[in-house]
Length: 192
Image (cartoon, rainbow, N blue to C red):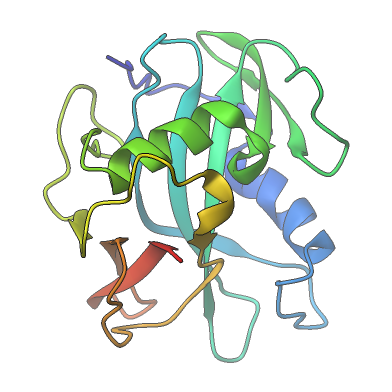
C-alpha cells in the first residue's frame, strides 16, 4: 500500500511540469509559460512498494481555451537505470522521503506493468490524494487485455477531450474537472 504524505515538494510537481510540458511534441504551445493546474487523476500501486505511480490530469491555464493533459508520473528514490534523458521530468525534495526522481511514466517499466494489469482487470485504481482508498470513478471497460499484449499495444491519451466517443477495445476512463469546475470523463488509455 502506498502512503500519501501530505507534505512539501520543492520544486512542486506543477512547477516541474511548467518547465517540462513545452518540451513535449504533444503540447499545444500558447506562446506563454504554461500554467498547469491539477484537474484530477488516480494512482496505481507498485507491488514492491518502491515506485510511486500517478496519472495526473493538468489543464494549462495559459491557453485561451484551456487544454487538458494526462501526465503519467513515477516517483523514485534513485535514478531509473537505463532511462534516457527524455524520460526524466526532474528531481524534487520531498518533505518526508528526500530526493525524488520524477519520470514521465510511459518510460518506466513499473508503470507499464501496472497499467497492463489494470487493463487486464488485475489492478485496482487508487484515489490520487488519499492512502489505501480505491477510486471508483476510474473504470476499465471493453474486453480485458490479453495476457500476450505488451505496453506497445497501449495508447496513453496525452491530450484529453471531454466526453469522447466510446472505445470498443479494452480501455480506462476516469473523471477530471474542467476549469469551470464541471466534472467530465475521458478515455485515459486504450489498448489497440
